[in-house]
Image (cartoon, rainbow, N blue to C red; front, side, top):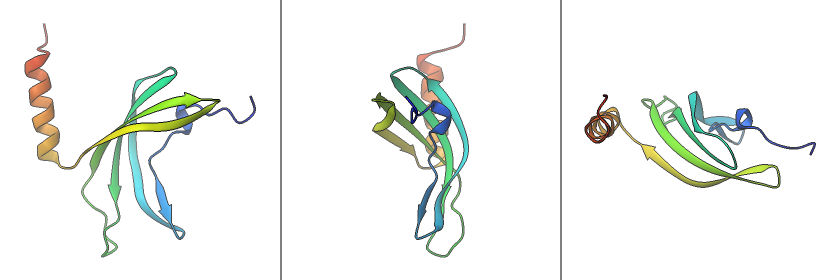
Length: 96
């Protein structure tokens, strides 16, 4: 299939009227296959034109006929929330 997408093609950048509104800073693939889960680090352009603090988004995709379609997403909106999630996960899944 010529137009088959790969996980490398998946990004969270977004433009509106030729202006970058969401800039992807980094990407980490959590799972691959027919269902793909990716964690993106990104920032958003504010109405003032400045960039926001970095944020994290976890997106889940399903591959249908060679194309990935977003099925769900969750935004981690602050460093505080990110640390709270990490702390709780470490309680649930302590290192052995």
